[in-house]
Image (cartoon, rainbow, N blue to C red; front, side):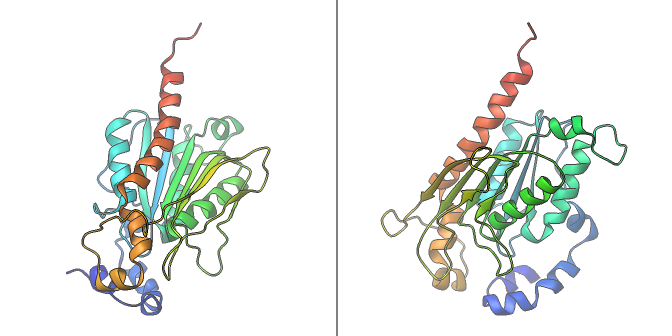
Length: 259
């Protein structure tokens, strides 16, 4: 069992105490990008960034955000850069987005490069809160975001994950209401004229149970419903449908012949 697997069984207070240690133990290449082992399309039309929750690795194939990224890569390998980051590597995700948008490689983004940006962000738990924080950072840089999706969003005590900035075209929120850890039930737009809230969608696992496998004792005991939002295939199917809708529309537009 690796170090993170052992630590994932500890209580949250102990996990927070070792967070800095975990970051230090990461390999430099992983911490810098998180995009290990996946081909990057040349000049991708879309940039899709997902975030895992808690202390989950970006490449843990059991996790909903990682599984979704794998499906999107297979379906849109020529059009989209798709990558998952740990929620604490939000700055690395920002740098990656800026690097991909900088198509002339001059070290800065022109108005045209920003206008061409088609960015989609999604995440679970702390990763869902990271989605909103990254959207705000992109807003300050003048970069638009097509879609944000939060799944059982949990903000750290110094964060704010409820208000969607006005550089986001559309946003959706999925949550479950039960347990010691549960997601934000309501998000809203900073500017309703610029951002469409697609819905605050409630999933109740007391009414429609979902079975999750390979949970630690701590997760089963204290975060069972929260973890169900991470493994619920119906929930992630809805997230995928929202993302695919934007990717497929952009693919059709890009492939349509000019009049």
